Length: 166
Image (cartoon, rainbow, N blue to C red; front, side, top):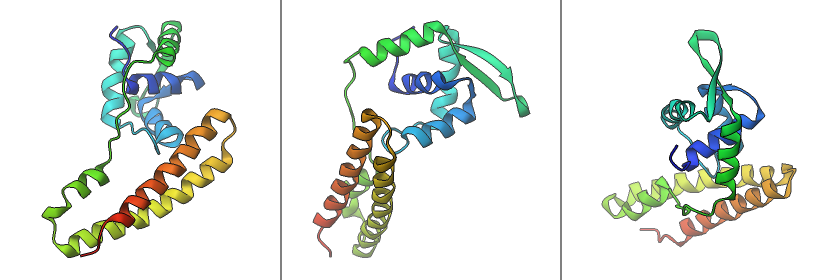
C-alpha cells in the first residue's frame, strides 16, 4: 500500500472505536475533527475500498439499505500507528473564506460587505463552539487542538477586522 494520506489516516483512527459504515464515518469525522480537518462523503467512499483492498480494513456486517460496515484490521492498526509516528506531509490551510477574500476585488462593494459581515457572524459562532470544545476537552491533546481552534477563530476575526470598509 502507498503511504497513508491524511484522509485514510483519519478513517483508520476513527475505526479504532469499532466498526462503522461510510455514513457513520462521515458523521464521526465531522463531530470529532470537523473544525480543523474536513472529510467529505466522496473522500470517505473513495478511500474505503482502497483501504480494504490493501488489507487495512475488512468488510463487516451489512446494515440497513445495504450499508456496509468496515472493521479495522491488525495491519490497519500498524499502518495508522506508523502514520502517527511519521513526520512526512506538510500542513496546508484550505480556507474557502480566505480564497473568497483574495478574489473579493471582483465583487461590488455591497457584495464584499455582505461577505465580510456573513463571515464575521459565522466565525463569532464558530469561536463560541471552539471555546466550548476547549472547555470540554478531556485530554491534553484534545485540549491543545481545541485551544488552537480558539486561536484560529480569533485570527480569522482579526483578519476580517483588518479589511477596510468601502
